[in-house]
Length: 436
Image 1 (cartoon, rainbow, N blue to C red):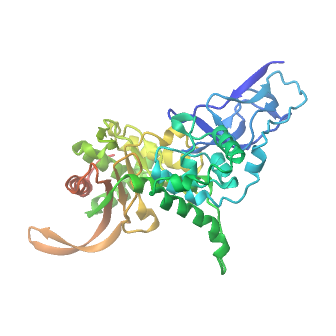
Image 2 (image 1 turned 90 degrees about the vertical axis):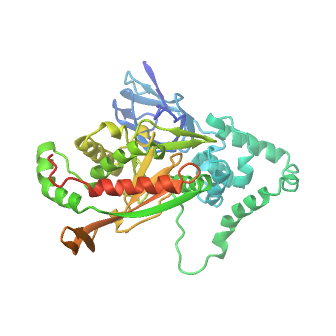
Image 3 (image 1 turned 30 degrees about the vertical axis):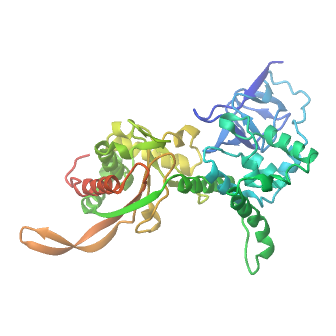
C-alpha cells in the first residue's frame, strides 16, 4: 500500500498558515489526481487545493476551521487504490465548541485590536474561541503568540483559556492595574455583544463573512496607521473615449482581447509614477521605502459584493496590449474565484474605479502598506469652456473626476497634488490618432 501525504501548500511568500474551510472528500472516498480535495482560506484569498495523488482517502488529519501551518500533513491517500477501512478525522475537544458557535458577538471588536497593533492577524478559529470564551479584543491583544510574526495560534489561546480557568482570580485585578489608556479600548469591545438585546423593529442581522471581516480590519488599520489626505482634480478624457469607441472592435479582432478604459488609465498612471517615484513607496518607521518595480493593484468587485485587489506586476515593463491582457486575466480570475494568493501580493500603488458604480468621485482608503490610492470617477458628458485660437467656446466633453488619498507622513500636499495633476494631463494628452 503506497501512502501519499498531502501537505498544506505554500500559497505565497508571506503566507505561513491557512484555515481549512471545507473538505470535499471524506475517508474512504476515491480521489483523482488534481481533483479538488479541500477549500482553504488565507488572509489574502480563498483557494481550492487539488489532490497530489490518485487513490483512496485513508485519513483526514484536520477539521474544518482548523488553522494549519504550511507544509503540515493534512491528509493521506492510498495511491495503490486499495479501499482500506477509513480512519475517522482527527477531532480535538476544543474543535467541537468552536465549530458550533454561530454567534460572533465579540467579532466587531476586531478592528479595535488591529488598530492597536496593525501587524497582528487573528485567524477565524482564534476569534471564534475568543468569542466562545468571552475574551475581549483588549485581552486578546495581551496573549503572547508563538505563531509566525507573533500571531496567536489555537494552541496559544487554548493554553491561555486553561490557565484563565485554573486561576479565575487573576484577571480581576488586571483592569485596575492596567494603564489608563486601555480602559477606553476595552469598553467598546463589550458594546457590540449587548447590541442585539436593544435592537428593535423590522431588522435583519447579518453576520459578516470571513472576507468582509478581513476587509473591515484592513480598513480600520489603514485609517489608524496613515493620516489620510485626499486631493481632487478633473480630466477631459474625450480623446480616450473616442479612440476606444473607434478601435475596440479592431483591437479585439487583432489581439483577441477586449480593451477597457482600465489599461489605458494604468498606462498613464505608470508614466506619472516614473516622474514621481515617491508615490510608489511604503513607510517603515521613519524610513521611506521607494519601490523600483511598479505593481498596480486594481480594486475588483466580487460576485459576493466584497472587494479584492489583484496586482498587475511590473506594469512599467508592459505596453498597452500587455496591460490589457493582465487586467482582463486578473478581472476574470477574481470573478471566478480563481485568484492565487500571489496575485494579491506585492502591490505598490492601488487604483479603484468608483465610477463603475456611477459615483462621480470618492475618498478611497489607502491599501496598506502603500502610501497612495487613486479613485477614478464616472465619465460624464458636460459642457466645458474650451480655449481656441478664435476665442473661448462651449463644447460637450467627456469629463472624469480623479481623487487620490495619500499618507501625509511621507506624501505632502505638493507631491500629492502634483502627481494627481500630472495624471490628469497625461490622460488629456492621449493621442486620438494612435495606432494599435
